[in-house]
Image 1 (cartoon, rainbow, N blue to C red):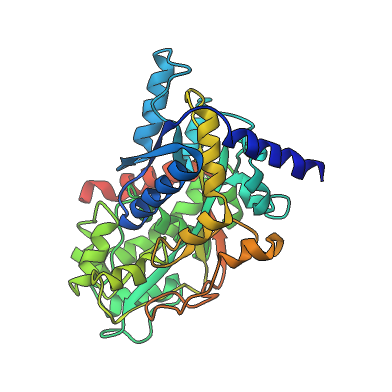
Image 2: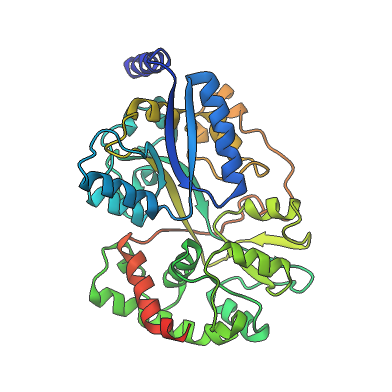
Length: 387
């Protein structure tokens, strides 16, 4: 009861605090769905909180990390240009390592309790690294594959079958360079599912011995896969968005994404054919939670916290989850929501191209953040000179 009263007082205090403010939310700007959702967020926070959310669209999240680091080096410790940042994985690890994030604020958010963090430990773990109250969970995602039923009736269901698919249908599958988020995610998926790889090593900080044990069987597989890829593996798309265009042009029969809802959304926009279907690999789907942080030098920390609390509200989370909005899975625990809160998550008729309900067979947690750079660098060392 005391905690509920404290939370209520915190909300009242926020609602009555100060004058209208503008916060700069630095977030990836490559998705029309995400951009549209954040525009909706701004209309709500302006009306309810008197706070304008300015979406600073990023091509790469590391650009915002570099900006905060540069401001710290220049002695700008309280008037930073970044108030909120959408991060996870290696970017969070870098910001935590350089002490670039505001600390010990997440547990004070009234709506954070709705994630049930005591039960769901991944609400406070980011790529194997404790968040320590420096970032709040925002959404969940997991890898999915999609295929064109005009050309393919039985898609591959695991990594070994994917290799057989490539040999049967040469040039009809591709993955981006591992500088792209989806490209490095594909390498992690393989590392977690191929036989002969000590999976437990991937959840520890990388070292030279562990890296050798992982990349040896991984590269044996890739050496066989690459000649079967689009352009015979001599050219790799630089961005994941290129894969959708190749699929729509019927150059690819099979592709993949980290956002299940973007597939039916793309079909509805006529960016993908109606014959597209989404599914998940039976040997596992790489999955993660993505977060929002407040830089240590933001001059609008209280306003930023108000916005994050709104983003964790059942209403905002439910809207984000809708396939025709974004389709990003909620971090809230439905089992502890009351009837009013749960009512926001109304069911809708599934799109024919959407991932079936409970379509993921097995969720694979992200490896330790240190593996991202290690796998990427090893890949370029082996294959980069041929590009």
